[in-house]
Length: 122
Ligand code: 5GP
Figure 1 (cartoon, rainbow, N blue to C red):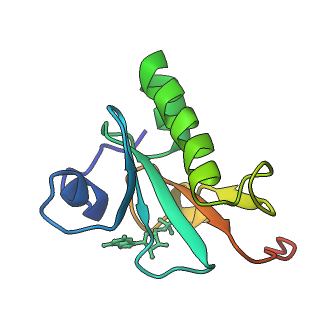
Figure 2 (tube, rainbow, N blue to C red; figure 1 turned 90 degrees about the horizontal axis):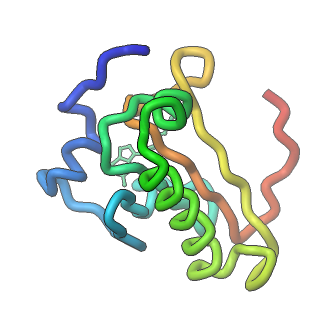
């Protein structure tokens, strides 16, 4: 696993060195709006802990962090009205490493909704 870079942009957001548009904050998780939204709803769900990627998070985070993260995902899809209970659905995606074209090396799940996403072709 690559070493976690404490100076990545999401680490700086977590330290409140950079402002963000927070949608939800819990003990272990922060959800905020993407700065360059690709859909009417585009938020990023991040753990507060120093995890580089999805696999790093799932292998190394505590059960409490993982539960909190997953519950936060479900909660924002409800709050932002894109869940199947309250809206028309959403896409959840994470990019990891070079082939995933990950830009920010702090694990994040993109939640996109508010329009049909189209098929994934790449
Ligand atoms: P990745 O390619 O790593 O999966 O996506 C990184 C995402 O972070 C991009 O969608 C990009 O728009 C978003 N992003 C990059 N810098 C910032 C920032 O400073 N603030 C916020 N809110 N989003 C950012």
